[in-house]
Image (tube, rainbow, N blue to C red):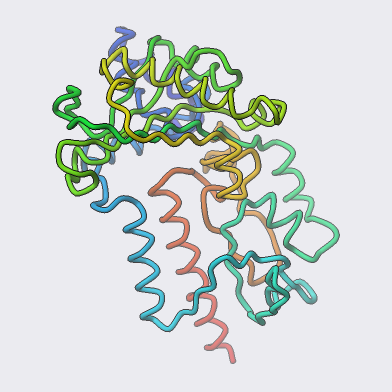
Amino acid sequence: MRYGVRSSQDVLDEFFSDPRLKATLGAYWPYLGLPLDELPFVELGPMFFLYAHYKPYHIRGGSQAMSNALLQSFLEAGGEVQFNTAAAKIHTDQGRVTGVTTEHGTRFNAASVVSNASSIHTFNELLDVETLEPQVRETFQHSRVGVSGFIVYLGLDVSPEELGITAASNFICSDLDDRAVFDTANNLDDPAGCLLTCYNYDDPTFAPEGKSVIGLMCAQYGKVWEDIPQEAYFDTKYEFAQRLIRLAERVYPGIQAHIEEVEVATPLTVMRYLNTPGGAIYGFDQNALETPVFRQRLKGPEGLYLAGAWTGPGGFQPTYMSGHAAANTVVRHHRTNLAAE
């Protein structure tokens, strides 16, 4: 209760004075999408504890390996999966979910539906109700669509050791002021910070021997890229990628000279793959109003359950945890209904 609504910056200032130490302790803020003066400590604190106590891990085979394992488990349990099939409408009747129709016109009747689309899309586009609950409208009015990312994927002809890389995840910044770093997410100025991930540092099978696969990522809001004229998009994308590479080279010189393959993704790319507003990767901006102190479960029709980054804290592990929680709730309600019958 003492720290529930205080900012991460405020709490760090209470205990520490050295700006370099505070910058180091607060370095994980990009994983939550807001600078320390906006980020509630109730979001940063648990992450810092988990990483310090349990240690961070990378999945051998990449995050796709986790998706494959979940898919296999679902199929073995009798589930049916349809790829390249978007949900077009969630049907309701007298305040209860009754099923889903796909973009191909196939209808599936169901008493329970789990949506991991953004809550904005779920309530405004998918649900067949014409009027939103007042609580849902109020939530959308005070919530801000969160940050997306600009990502450069690199295939290099040198090993991590030859580049001087000594950890899989590396936070790089040209300014200890995280607010100054974050502000570049709202424009196309030179990026002031990025995350460099070397995928084959922990998992050597991720790249051929003597080579490296690296991802460079910095925060960018989708609006910045939505405003770029179509004819200038390609040149702008690769010019910005060059600047991000130059930032990384301040710590690991020589990256540019060893590039064999390069792929670049902007927030518009993320938007196309995730179909989220603004290409947001963490859902809504996780400011004080999105903390458990104020956050309320969105009230939809009975039988509708939400999962994913838009239900609470975004990021890799919290998203899986929200799916786990949604599944448990569906099973519990199903058992309760069976007992009542």
